[in-house]
Every structure is written in structure tokens, then in C-alpha cells.
Image 1 (spheres, rainbow, N blue to C red):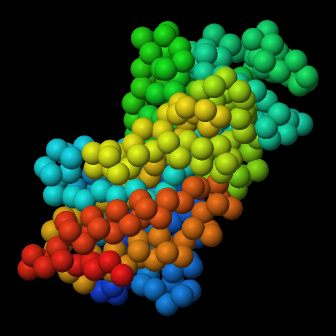
Image 2 (image 1 turned 30 degrees about the horizontal axis):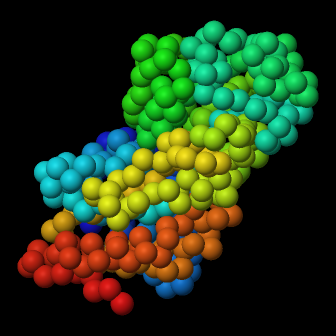
Image 3 (image 1 turned 60 degrees about the vertical axis):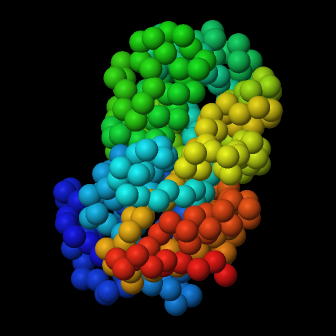
Length: 345
């Protein structure tokens, strides 16, 4: 069910393709896009409906599902219960991932470089301008850092990845908090801007000396070098499924309003910049057939999609959280006639 074009050239092409009645269209966060790409291919191969997903950013996903122009939206920025009620939407967690700093330095191996919040804040504030700055050398005494300018890369669009990254920096640097703050978009002092995780990945990959931040799956797919960061306990940790899972283990979805949790700087040896990606669907569907198909796809992802998540550095939800989501679907989502569209199996 697609009622209107998204409004950008690529999206017009995406949405303009002829569709069957059970074709499903979703848009939103770019962070989980590699996983949706994998899931939709597997789902189709196993006889499921055609699911088309376009990564236009969390802000775009929220805008389009609120407008009713797509069948589902996604966002790594959860809505509050009040916002959900106002928009007539149901929100549910789908998958968890990490936001990681990536660099392009010749000869640098993944996990060889150490960074921390105050240093990254000063890099993006333009105070640390070269890779052999004394503060970087102090963190990396055994790494041959070149006397090369640091090329800054950040997101151009409103992005939950930016919100997570800048929230982390604001918690580590009083200057960053006062001068830049945190948000889906901020006034970056300098640097090149890329659209989506894919745009940042491409800029970093093609710019010697660059530093940027992306969802971990994009770093893996592009074979970019990632940096270590200290966890809340001070020990440096690598950005991988294990450290993301440690952060996810602290999430109390059951008690969180609208299942919205904060996974920035969680206790222990966990990766400090972790986000949850959420799905959004109408509480009262305009088309019972289409929304039932959407729920069937996400139910399949919960049952059969976990094996595809870990190799891409995503963390699947615990079984108890999935069960809670299914109860939410059954209790809150109805068709135009007011009848429930989902029955837990």
C-alpha cells in the first residue's frame, strides 16, 4: 500500500514500481539497511511476500509512516507513548547494533587504533588536526601514526546514528555539550557530509586520512578500520557482536515506556554507542491484508532472521522481548473493522 511518493528522486523510482496487492514497502533508518536487504531476500526465497525497503534515514521513516505513504517505517529514535498515541502508531524493537568510528589510514588494521570520547570530540571540534597529535600518540604508543591531516566526515541528513554519536560525545566533553550538543542533526564545525550510512562509508573509504562514524555492518561490508573505545568501566573494547550484546543485556524493554531503551554508555565492558532499531506500523490499519502481511514478515524475521543478524554485527532480540512484541501486536493492532490482525502462535 503506497499512497504517495516520498519526494526524492531515488524514492520515486523505488515507490513507482508496479506492485502486487501483498507487496510491502517500508522506509527509514539506514543503520539496519544491510540486515533488511538480507532478510527481504531470504523471505522472498522462502516464498514470502515481496518486501522493499529504502534507507532514507530515521527522520524520513518517521515522517512517511506518520503520513501513511508506506506500509511500515523504521527509526533508531524511538517515539514516546504520547507521540505514538498522537500519530496512531505502534512501535516495536527489531534489532540492536553499534555505531563505530571508522578511519582510513594506510596500513592500519581494524582494532589497532584506540580513541576515546574527549579525543574524538576535540577531533570534530577541529582542535586535533593531525594523526600524530600528542594526544593520539599517548593513546596509541605502539601505532605508527603519520603526520597527515585528519579529514572529518559526518552525516548530512537527520540521523539516529548522529544522535547516538553526538550524545556519546556530549557525555564525554563539556565543550562539545556546550558548543555542539546532540541531535539528529547538529552544526558541525567542519568536515565533509555524506547521506546515510552508505554515504559516510563511501567518503571515508575514498578519503585518505578520514574519520567518520557508521553502523557496524557498513564498516564490515566496506572493510574499513574500526577503532577501539573504552567502555563505562574504562577498559577498551572492540566494536563487535559481543560488546554490543553486553550493552543489549542491560536493556529492560519490559519496563521501558513504548519499549524505548537507552543503550549509550551502559555499565561494564560494553560498547558505549549502541542503538535499537524500531519498527512502526499504524495502530488501526487502512488495509487489513497489507498490515497483516507486514506483521507476518516481522514475525518471520523474529523466528528465522537471527542467523543472518550476527554475521553483519547486529544483535537479535531476546526471546522474551519478541514475545512481548507479539502480545503488543495482538492487543493493539486492528484492521479497519476493529478486529485484531495478529494472533500469537
